Amino acid sequence: MCQFSPHPTRATLANYIKTPNIYPAGRLDADSEGLVLLTDDGKLQHKISHPNWKEAKTYLVQVEGNANSEQLTRLANPLDLGDFITLPCKAVKIAEPEWIWPRTPPIRERANIPTSWLCIVLSEGKNRQVRRMTAAVGLPTLRLIRSGIGDYNLATHPLLPGEAMEIST
Image (cartoon, rainbow, N blue to C red; front, side, top):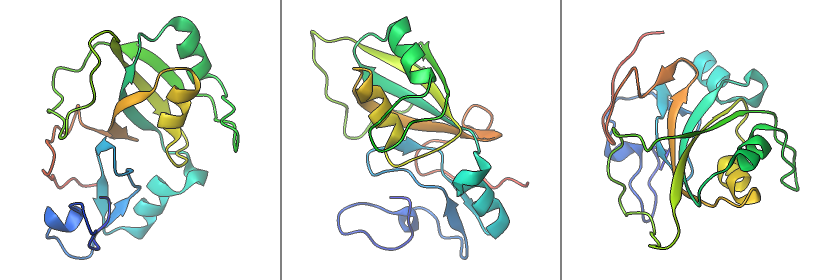
């Protein structure tokens, strides 16, 4: 969980990070994985997490089904999710990333239903937005990994779950 306070059933950042006076810049929901930036710089935290700054966030998404060009076009264009309309974003189909760690617990698998991987880059981040977007185009999310926030990404700063790296801004 992207918090330092205790959670009744899940590990939190306090289980992994012992550095005092740092805070997460943005959050991941309980079913998501990936990059979390921690900072002691309030201005940086605000820039990363406040919607007015529109800091790009990159997600690797495993979906149920074989994504087609029509679905990718719908994802990339403004999409009405009922309570809001998304901003345009980047949505492309990608090969399964070779560097990703095993998921615990594993995703559900159905032998007769294929899965595919997408890379989605958003400049906004509403609650469960990526999951809602993929579901709206008929591609339920099975696994969601945030791989980048602005200039910081797991390709240039490779980390495994529970690992941390100090970077300067």
